Length: 338
Ligand code: MRU
Image 1: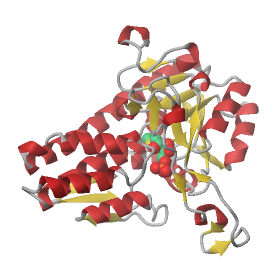
Image 2: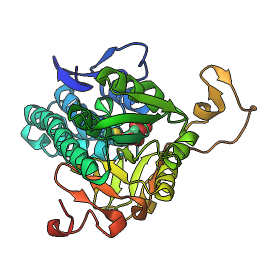
Image 3: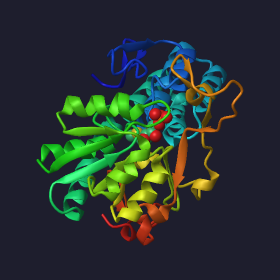
């Protein structure tokens, strides 16, 4: 089952808020429904958001055929449902580019976004696995964060796609998954995917990941990204930056697996990226239970910026960029080694 797809004139997607307890598909036939699913993280993960953006425009183009103003307003609403992952706006813009040709052309473009994502995931996973096998001695042990698996994409996955490719080659020993506060994408989704893949894994709290690295339990960090800026800064789930600091301290490579669609050359550095700040209840409560005193002020950053200097490798379907060694995503292709 794909994480997100188009069936019978509507968007179908796995409701990620219900995992790991229930595997349920949502059928979404309104733009409002799609925006709501993105906002409450029922659809989440940068590549899956790219697909949602493109399919959302396809949905709007069908519902409002011959009314480009309404489709444009729908596209704007989808675009701003979440601000940080560049893929969402990228998917919307790609589909909107075909609107003058009519609703069928928009849908064709949206479906191309999905197919390209699957192909990109496969290619970058192979490249990432080979990179790790070259740079890590012995069977690879990995620390990951958040969920960058099939659930975060159309299928297959980016960071977990690399894990999957290593596993298929018999080159993977173990994965440590950080729980990922506050919405537990690691504990709920990554652990679920690793179990499905039959990969040996251990769940740790976010604050234990530095110890996992310092004790040599994981020999590489592999994560996804929501946006990579022109200078090689990596924006990903909050907790990635501390993981990169810990990786540098432990002398462990910090590897980012992401499709080219996550690279945003129009934004110079991470300082210019709009980092989503989410509601207080996500950290002041534990489910239905209140854990902080009433009225506690919170600062619930959903993402953080890992400076390029801490990023050993960014692996895409096309290349490997080495930001810590001065490689930049906006370099001419020969400068970024393969
Ligand atoms: O808030 P989320 O769950 O959408 O955050 C997702 C992440 O930070 C992922 O690591 C990122 O999108 C890469 S997914 C291949």
